Length: 140
Image (cartoon, rainbow, N blue to C red; front, side, top):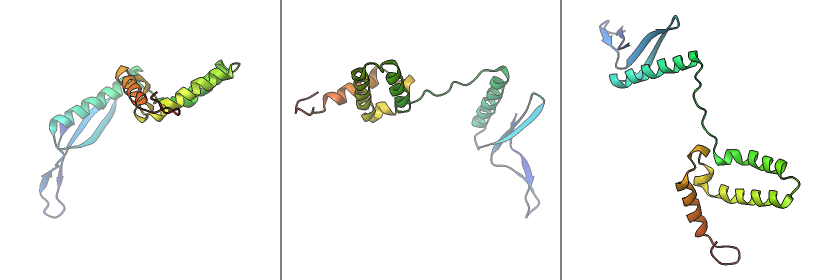
């Protein structure tokens, strides 16, 4: 239930209605009462529903999905895995690490979460790399 609490004005003593909406409900025998800090009733109702859903998911054991790491955040783990899996082939480790460095230099890709790297992100990277000049003076 959303509501606007009423309080007495300290100066005039009049009963005044709050400008923001609050919600209150009972969950698992505990009273939950919180300000939404919103002036819009519909937004306040949405916030109340979201809070109830969050509590219910925790009770049932449904975990909210953790955010996927960015490519930059996974770079160290990938490098370590390459050293472990391909340790007997230093040229392969060097190859993968150099390619990873190129990927990390392209900020939109480096900052992208792994679950959001799609064909469009790869195309943008490819387009960017094709505009670069190699150390021999030609296009890559």
